[in-house]
Length: 266
Image (tube, rainbow, N blue to C red; front, side, top):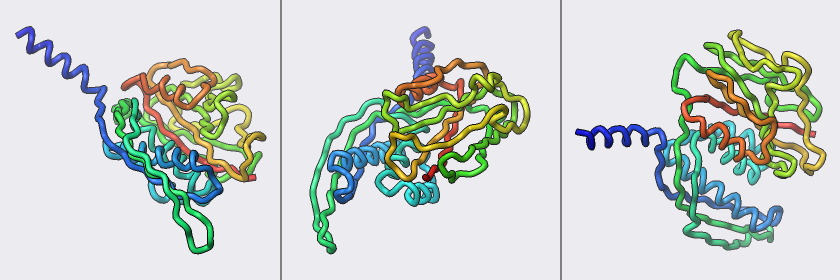
């Protein structure tokens, strides 16, 4: 009897940490505007996305993808597509089992570079709060900004919750931090939301801009909203986005999070 009880306990303890080994494939086609190395990185990211989707990870809609491509370019958009989708599952280790590089001439005399990658990945599902009465929605005053515009956020909630918001900068050099806390902050110290609708900022302004060290005419920025029933202390900044992810993905069934993207043009 003791053995049966022990087995049952182990089974139920392991269920929330569900993981699965799956294969994923990705292909990148590009011209000389990006390097072969970067092209293969894009192929690997697409292979990761393919693996995530096989385990049931959320995929952003084709409309969002097309919108991203219009602003950020097809190659960059594939990176953003993976970045957005990866929030509903995580890859805990992978092996590249096949990698092929080739070239093909095109009619205009240029050359197309092709990179095909196949991976084997351990995909872990992410556990969020499942209480249907604990949910929230996010809206921006716009999703397309010019450099220097002001961002306004409306948060709709069902029941009171603590909220942390981080700005995610995937194109930023990690030495300058890729994840910065937007809310709470020194001007808005109360992270406990009680009103059915809250407009942020409550004090000051959120100004969007393209960093000076980024040589692009437009960028796609992201915010991640992390809600919890209890107050959770996060750092004000994280070196990489993965560092931030680890801080809240480890809080199984204690947080609920959503992301939103917006574009900035010069």
